[in-house]
Image 1: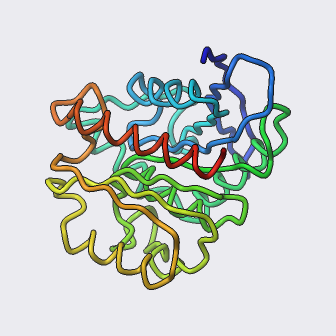
Image 2 (image 1 turned 180 degrees about the vertical axis):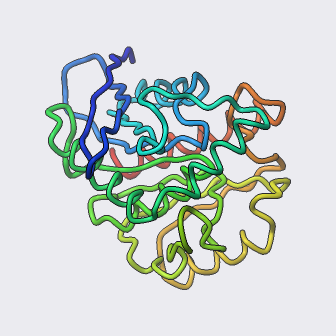
Length: 245
């Protein structure tokens, strides 16, 4: 399916948040997906993933997660300095600010003429996986895909300690977790804690483990694994199609 691409600006608190939106080109009404990037924001690898998902029949809205700190349109380079910069931006962003951004994008999707307001989901990578998990606390979220989500078990997200793991029971939709068994940022103990919490809260979920490293779905890095990434995307598309037939 061909897609269209645009940027929109949403005012959240006193900050202007740019959101990249990819939509199916054929006229119609589609599910909406709140898409969260990793700490490097919306560089080419993330934009390719947004566009890829939109081509399966979704209106995908990807906000710049550090818009209160970085200039509009800023892309952080995925090198050592960029990693430090992205992690510093994450630490400087209040958890309540992440939540406010989430609410703003959900409201934008619900108001978009091309979106079915009863079919809203979310998908994210790394810190974005954590944000996607947290977005599932919102009642509109019917499906949340979390790809190697960092910091859920430890509460590491922004300023202070995130209460994400304590709020699992607030999730009313279904979850899909994509995890790498070679990922040092989400060790086995953290994976066990996360899956145990979801299971005990009776949240409908699926978990797929790959013998892969962190960010194995990002195609510009040395940890990229094409076979694992292709398999993960197949599971993601199948999952979303089940929730949003």
